[in-house]
Length: 199
Image (cartoon, rainbow, N blue to C red; front, side, top):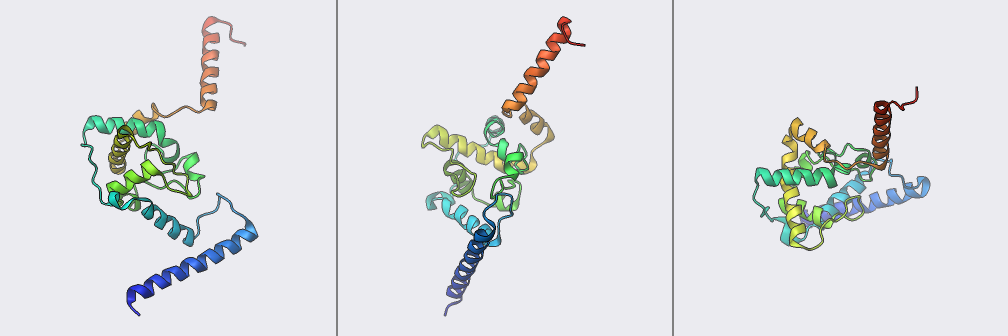
């Protein structure tokens, strides 16, 4: 039996055994997004992520030229649309990112940075099933360009500056609770300035 065939059989056996263990555990304890993914789940998720990219995209290079203006545009887009899960610094240490299952990945890590431009583009455009990553593409050239600019930003994330992070904070969406707090603070300030503030 060839070595490659043995390896494939071994991997399939691991997946089957892991699946059985996972089903047994689930039947006993149920599912919870608080748990850490098991080894079989991590292997399956990794493979699904790789298979999610169409073959014609896997080796694709970013067609959008890298300029400071384009990077600024991508940074603003990321802050407004992606940072709620991934964080401005791309490390996924947000309230949303930490509570997903699987958790939002660290974009500065080798595992993400070693993906090809085409794989990153495909993940942004098409999402990854059975994870919290939705597909943002809509099939238009404008959508594709936006996703390619985000690929440049993801490449930039490991060397992002504190100045860029501060700028991104001003572009992050405001939650309804934060909006309410801001309105309350503004109201109290107005009352204080007008002399109607309760003592």
